[in-house]
Length: 314
Image (cartoon, rainbow, N blue to C red; front, side, top):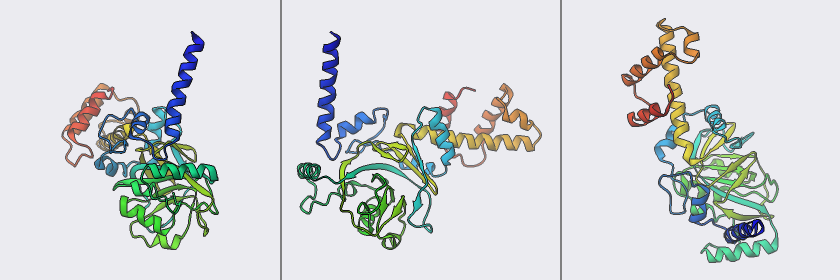
């Protein structure tokens, strides 16, 4: 009986992985299975559609705040540091929804299979140039995230033409674990920026696109299609879509508790020790009244705040 169970499990695994192994672009069903914890709206390709509002608010969250919360939730491999920016004069903060692209060292028989699959998917295959396939799928708010396995010469997966295509479609930049070419041309794309590992003047000739919207590795991080990208000057965090609202609200709520605590310390109502310790029932009640009558503009809606307060264990 045990042997039959193991055999059946192997057959199911083989069928599922085999079906996806033939597909350069992951199917919506596969992406939905990868991101099953997401319960909200999705794109036609199956990726979670994190709201523009949350992505804009995410810009104000520090890498440290988001990272610490992810660690608490059991996500230990979502950060990669040590990047170079394409343009130091452009914005060094970017958020968006990940479209993933996986590259591997070129191999002729594998390339033939990729081209054949590209034909079936209706992609532009006639010049056997697969590098642009993922870029053509981008929509506004997407971030092109490419695993180029740290390749330097003859593995430059983005140049000025492809960079222009990225920005035209997404109004966002790129995250490339590898090298790019034509830095001068890329810097001329107004509003565009990229987090890269370096640049090289060579063309892409020894590297092959093998997957679109599949799980990829970016250095120390695991990235799924639809993850929210939080990119700041020296680091990039990839946040699972179903956790973005929680992380944004937690950071915003923490900022409110800090403001409340500092105000009450200045007023000599509580000591710094009382604010830095587990709050008493009196302080908790005072905070709830304070935030209910908050005179400024709250970073979150009243509905979001109330939901968060209900879940928080005061």
